[in-house]
Image (tube, rainbow, N blue to C red; front, side, top):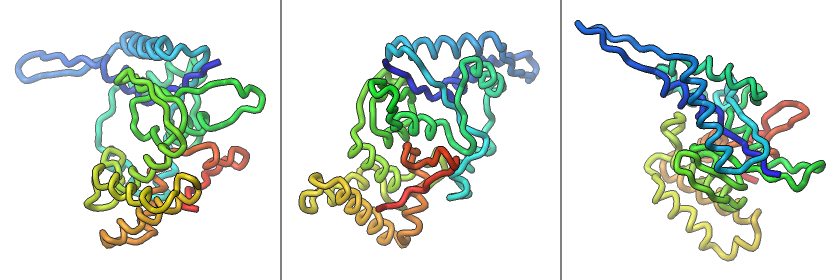
Length: 260
């Protein structure tokens, strides 16, 4: 049994955006309008295309909550999006999609919901397979099967690859999400820094040791840039897409990532 874990934030945004039409009335007057029927059709078409591609028997649509726990860790998180205009029908499409029983958890982003579900082992149904469906590279920090519906690309992420991508994100940051990472470190530099960790002994024989060595080199990069471990930890926490071990489902609380 395969269940598709779908990033509904992206599907809804795309459907709302594509339904907008600009009209030139002449003499410098323009208006923007959108039809709910067109937005609904765009959403349904995208959803069905994803389900056909991944051949899933079931699916889960995850939306972000209006509150975001990362802003408590880094107040400027996604602050660069505050003045960006959202498509007119975005809120309407989200309400429309709720007919499918969408999931939204207080203070969590949709990515977090997908990450938690993808890494939750079901004792009642151990044979169930999850596949994450999104276009967001942040989900590469989650081990498991993936489908990028923007590129129509299937791939699988191991736990080691997921942990490494988390450290890369910690070093490079993400300007679209409003966290800077380590000053002066881009993707190529991040790879070189983490390769040094792999070159230290035989860390692949001990996953815990590898994580510790990764972190040591990440902190060293921040210190070289004039910052300390505290800043590195802040960046690592906002870069971390939650896994099942990062969320207390009983207390409904985030378990902030720590390097050990």
